[in-house]
Image (tube, rainbow, N blue to C red):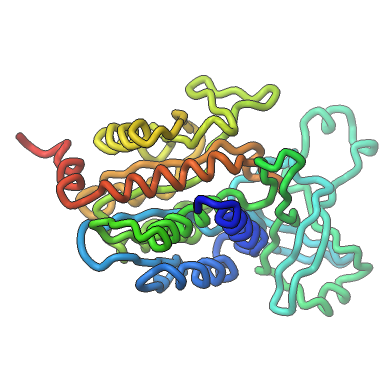
Length: 369
């Protein structure tokens, strides 16, 4: 991530630009434009697959190492416009209704962005039973402050347009903490790019080909993972995604205790992927050799792009790494700068050691004797 304050600022600026880009599932263009601009400085080649996933390659020979972060963020799609000019919508990705009322959003159209707010019935007007039940996403709507459907037409808003949270990137009073929308998973995109930068600027020798990938539509079924893996055809997969910090009041995970600032995450299990035992041993050894603290993570209620990458062709030894993050799938997630820095150092050190012999050793863990 760079050894100077300037390097840290560069990562922060890159993450800010990535998180503030509009990129709901199926509409990630603004994100891959940012990724392409940064990757062009360090990669030997950049391109996109036909579904829209971004792929940058550094190195021309050796094992193919795929480092992946998904570009899409949880958002919404406009489905209907009422006669009074309110927008009904469908969630893209997993949303909990309780985090949405009165939050600002932007409707993305061909003519620009339009600010609105998520509307709901005032609790003062609800019967006691409904107040206790909580808010259903299907009961919500978008209020753009207009007075008629005709005004919506004049703004160029149509069914099928996308909606994203409005939440500018902010460095908090504790300067190690960053707050923004779309940390899930622009963090992974930024890390994949920063690994390329470290390998390039520091002249680090790596006897492999590194593919930094930004996938599309992870939040709606890891769809870009399938097509991008077909393009890259990886020998090893490292997926970078956010984890769930358990260091805020009332937040517990019976399987893992993770703290922001306590180091990056090694994901042992999620609902779509069990970490390859050869990769677990390898990345743990690298962290210990480099003095990088890490934490174990288990996620029973979600999955990452490794869900499909690890089953590509005859199988790809895979690991998922990340950072503890508070309040994912909301307007305002928080993560820690120090965890990001440690994660980049960890992955760079991993890449340096993944020569042909090491890759064959890892691939041979389950080989017939």
